[in-house]
Amino acid sequence: MVRTKPAKLATLVALLFAVAACPAAPVSDATSQVEREARRILSEQASRAGWVDPVFDVKVVSAKRTLPSCRQALLVEATDTRQFRRMRFSATCPGNEGWRHEFIARAAVSANILVAAAALPSGRVLADVDLELARHDVTASPDAVSDPADIRGMTTRRSIRPGEAVRKSWLAQSILVRRSAPVTIVARTQGIEVTVPGEAIDAGALDSIIRVRNANNGKVIRARVIADNMVEPVEVVRAMPQSPD
Image 1 (cartoon, rainbow, N blue to C red):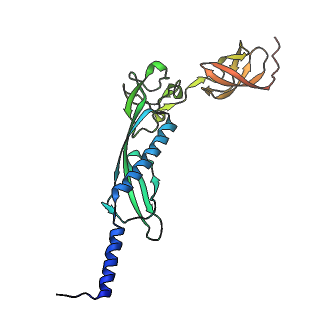
Image 2 (tube, rainbow, N blue to C red):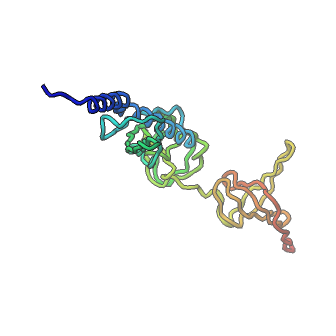
């Protein structure tokens, strides 16, 4: 029988107790924290996009089954979240025994967004009748929208199939007022509406500010485009003398 010296035996026992006190941590602990952080980031992005009733499916991938123990709370940080399907995170154990491990979160996102109610050709000015709300996968469509007001009056830059998500990158601002075109200047104050004829000096899309000449007095004003060939005054720029009859 091999006898162990008391000093060596004490050292061995102490080492065994240390190992037992600090076992390897299951990677699932870090994985759950990474998943919570991924869901928080996805929720913030969905809120900024205005998506209705978003649903997130998140799977976290790690190359390791266990991680070294950590006496302190893990620090989880997003390192790259540009693509929902491949979001990168790091989990760091602070302190002297610290370590750092990389995780990948694969997310799929769906939400109630605007899709084409019928086939939309390129160059079509969108109206509410062209759109309907439907649940759709937006994992690869971060510029999908849910609020019709965000894209109403915009023009399609490409054809869109029925049921296909209407993405902002596929749209352009519609020119509602052409240069030198006759326009109606609408002024509203205290429940009273006054309209006068005018002429557009600049072209403009919805909500853009352009210069317009009042046909009655020759004044040039800055006006906001509110509809086809219709503007509302912002401020007077200068007075133009009327031509003699």
